[in-house]
Length: 445
Image 1 (cartoon, helix red, strand yellow):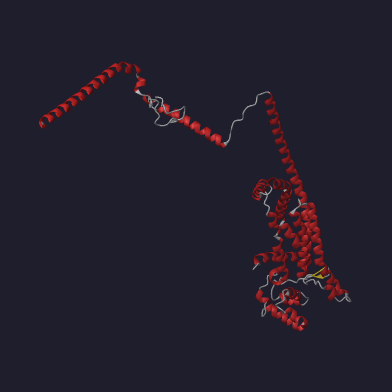
Image 2 (cartoon, rainbow, N blue to C red; image 1 turned 30 degrees about the vertical axis):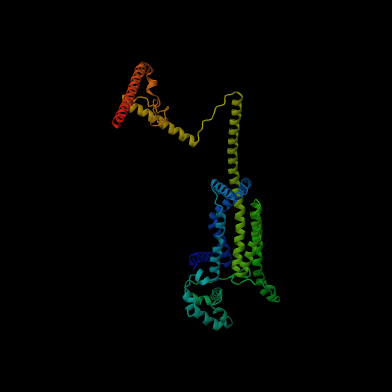
């Protein structure tokens, strides 16, 4: 499943073993090469973590400023990260890379025949040529090891088979089966790096034979040494990169205890080669961390000096402007700053467009149409209304008072004549009614 990871690191492990001819040195060089490969990523992670640590005072100021408004605080923090070109997750991301590498190395150590040497699985499986040859030689020369060498359920069966193949006399026979096979000696400083440390060492060891308990004691001390070195490395890192306190400080204290325990657990759960790798990797990481911390401290101090100088110059300019303003106030020479807001500028632009339109109309309209529009007020068309008429409420009497005075006698005379005619008509009607009444009376008689 993880062949795309394990195969390259298995090949690297084999190359280093061919170069050193010592399995322990190959593991140490493997840790060094991995650190060199990951150095660019570690540099990026270290730089990001140090920049984030330097922002802690400013983040505390933002926290005090915004108080309970968590959303505004987060927005300001993200804005601060963007200004400083910091990705807060990058430090955590690159710190997870060593774990897949440990898994790949564990696979290469646990399966040296298939991962390191590239032997096909069919050859070492039950019924395969190499498997059958191991059974044949073990039955003839080491019958007590037959069960161990053929127990395919054992997680470390390939290590035991590789050790059996590498024994003098056996390797010449197996090398004829496959030219990929290599003679691997797992012994390093008196320890069997293919064996797993036993945490019950003190209760199970035969102390009468130093050749037995000596290597076993060294193997037992590997996980202990890895845990102690891991704790010391974390302690040095915390001292060189002090946190701002609070949650981060609590997290660092937790990691200070957890990382050594994880190292001890891995070293006791796997072959001794893993313990050697953890010790070497931790030592290289500590040296690398010390160097990168000093290197980036110098760079960031120089950057901070430049920023502080720019801030000082800016503050000096502001102070000079303030003093100049105070001087002008005393001399009554202050000037009103123009309103350069976006809203004000838009209003000015609209006014200019209206004035240009009015000017254009004046130029393009014919002469007879250039009479002033009574509805206009300044440059604003129809300010008084489209149907505005200044003479709407002015009568004819107000316009021609002399004509009204000249026509008054004629109008009075005409009204008098009409009144007389009305009276005559009424008298005529009354007389006619009286005559008719008299006639009716005559007829009755």
